[in-house]
Length: 538
Ligand code: GLN
Image 1 (cartoon, rainbow, N blue to C red):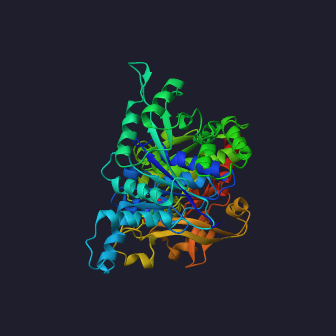
Image 2 (cartoon, rainbow, N blue to C red; image 1 turned 90 degrees about the vertical axis):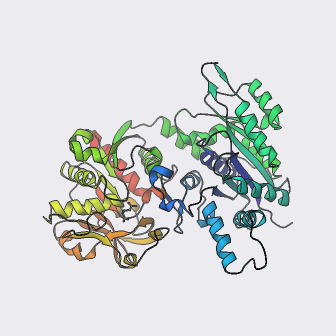
Image 3 (cartoon, helix red, strand yellow; image 1 turned 120 degrees about the horizontal axis):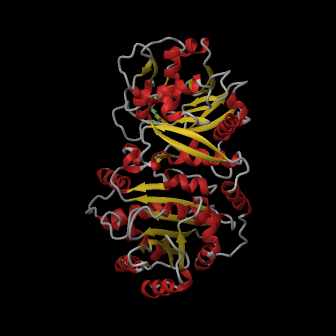
């Protein structure tokens, strides 16, 4: 019999932010640990072609894939929970779908026809789903962003309805993730919003096979009965997903206890192989009860007030903690506060300092003062992308005595443009998808912290930036003791800098946080948290 790729469609009900991405990733992990080859995909019903042009405050972090897509942060969950690499095919927005349809129309691809939402837009969505079908893929999980009932998500819901109809019931299924709120005044959990949300889906022809109920407290048998009856879902397929106690990495364990994956496989007529979660469980145990206690690390950024802005950074720090058998407590510091109050007021007592990525000049001087504090107080320092650029600026100003040194992103007329636009960026006019994006090779130099951490000299790391270390200043900075630790052979670009003699000081132009997972912490995060532990002990 020829290979059939099965499809799971995940929708959301009642409110957004229920952790659909996390739940989809957790389900993918369970299927993977039962021996299936899974792919994940997110459909986002907004008109931006990708989230790359949005402020982190709008959308949270922009995740970057190996092949250079600027994507939804749910892809980060997908990659962290599973061994599944995401690509451009893992995230589609309404904007991207429409822009494909419209450019095809201009090319004459629909000559003679009136181009319409149905069938042309829905066909384009179905093609995006079908693109993941392959001999090497057993199950595709497609998550539809937004909430059932949104005007924007209608074409996506119609497309997945058609898709399941076309492939047949044994090859596709619907999972609806919904909220069962606890109403304090009544002292009760309420199923009505979920009933209504399933009602909305029913009017467009989708009947969920599984209902996953996000709730503050466990579902009682009575709630289950009610939801099953009024939502037309088998009783054992009403699953409770209460808020986890300690960590998001407990979600798969919680779902496995309720055999969700078993029901999925049965519905899709796939063999129920053994589930092997030993490694995952051991990881969660270390995470919850680490041997080496806690270490406090400051993240000094410019989008601190929204936790999602630095999602992958916080996760990678947690992974670094797991690898060192300790908990990383993050002290989140808005860099503008360092400008106002000085670094000591906000950073004293921390065992490590991380300056993450960012765009635009707000808060930059605070980051530069942060670097100076870490450098002179000998506190382990990790600068990522903008964080590395700030480290180079600080070193130029303080150690090389280049007053006014800066990035031309922040000061067009700086006398010392130590960070500058790359040649190929100078002609760029369109802002969307035109940065240096995706994975590039890097060669690590001998005798560096980086080489020790990675244990190999050839690496590939993901990028998202326009500005670059200015090679015209390389010799000067090296002469004063800045170590160039990593080079991209394509274009001779500086990718990593270090400060020999400092306990741990490293800046990288790429984003290592995108390649860190709880089972395999990124080497730089592992090494950085290790250095912070050492600092704490001293
Ligand atoms: N704004 C800087 C640049 O474009 C840094 C980008 C980042 O930190 N991701 O080069």
